[in-house]
Length: 178
Image (cartoon, rainbow, N blue to C red):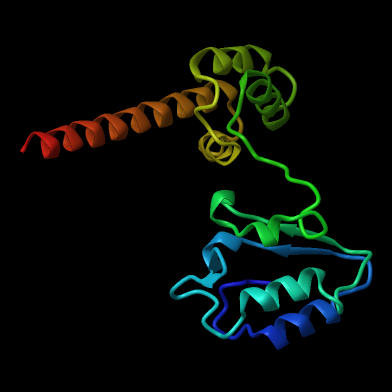
């Protein structure tokens, strides 16, 4: 269910949840994009889904048990505490940026047998916490059959990010000096 759909109302949201299978997985993506605190974000939730309608749908009187509800956000700090209280959000799972062991395992899984040397090389060139899994996968997809070329693609991506960051920092310094 897209919380930012222009056609979504309190009633249609409740109907969508009620019409879902008894034992299923439901996904509500980017909750922070639909609501800032208890207010609908401009351009989102324009169809009439209210914050109260969201809360009632996921944990109100008509809410049904036996389902797993996943709620995603890029900015948990923007979500109202009423949405995050136990009973609505029982488990929080942060997706952090990759560390050394995660990089090693991901590369080995991606390329399979014979990629141990490339995995070690990758761990040596990637600072911990500098890449998301999506970024890592995107770089490796540039060389799906060659672990060494995949590591090189990751290096190039990191170098590009560093140039972009450096350019933004020098631009900010020029603006502050004016």
